[in-house]
Length: 500
Ligand SMILES: *Cc1c(COP(=O)(O)O)cnc(C)c1O
Image 1 (cartoon, rainbow, N blue to C red):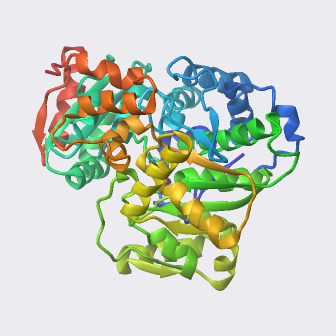
Image 2 (cartoon, rainbow, N blue to C red):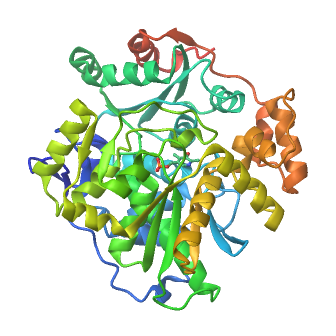
């Protein structure tokens, strides 16, 4: 399998290079030259463990790896770091099937890919005889940074440096990061907001002089963000896994089409479901759920993508996004793989802030149903589900539940449906407790967690419970224009670097 860019035919690389490079040289995203078919009776896959299934599905794309190499990667990723033996449990509540993607080390679905990516990168570096250390630079608004830190922690041949806005993340998120263990992890607070952090990281990537300095020190920069194909492909796996669990439990018959609802931000998670469908997984509708930042809803209804609007801050912050980067890969597929067209659409988005797809492309968007939930609807959904089923979901999952209910009212489609549950309610305890009418304004984040445990009757996840007593390891803070200095200091000091 060859990987190429969405924007030109200039580059053709193996998966190992696509994974290390992250983004194509022309600024496009790497895509497989075709979407492979499963060509199998799905029932034959039922007995596979999660890590075996993951190696099998990924093997259809990453054909320059031996199956045993992929299995080694998935075995290292999907182990006891997950607090559930099935890795991804499928839970039936109120007649809906919730695919709980949040049992990993940081309690959000990003763990599904970020526990694996470091191992894929390391194996890719070995295969390309890369003699440099891979330095991952990440700017985070909270969740991605922690998931990347956990994933890359103590992985040979890599270092990870995370920048976060010193006063722009929640108390829990900050604590999760500054207590991070691992010999190759570096967490830096910056005096600035998330955009400052993001801009600083981009500048480092584009700084020629600095990259020469890195080269001399046998380092190269890479990124763990969600456009890396090494994050997308592993996300296909859990949709197969979910379908197989439905088959196993006799909830559906062989070949029966199901719906999948996904709370969507950067369009990575739902794109993986689209790939699964193209591979042959029987999927009827892909329900794309947005919060009040409903750019994708408008796009799916009108065919016009228009980012010219104010970003709203909601209780589902991981979906507060105006430009969904991974949508580019869908546009590529539904345009009949027309690089020139994608190039011009992305150019228009950059310069004008808006583009419109062709009528033919618009028609092909039909497999998606777009919807959005207002803040009040999201909160109502959390409360309703708690009342009906005693089940507590986080704010992101609640957006998907709310949109799914609208879909069902509108279409009367009774197909079996899976909702992707993207975060543990413990990560967004204050909003969740507020929704079920149990939060007080004046209690701190740790008290919230204890209260949530009481209401849900579930044990506090170890990843959060242990935070209260963890030692702060990283306390360096830099000005927003000094990110490069921070990276330099870390790389020059080596093991002597003082994190405190
Ligand atoms: C990242 C994230 C999302 C959005 O996923 P995309 O792949 O960016 O669409 C939804 N929910 C949670 C909890 C997330 O962390």
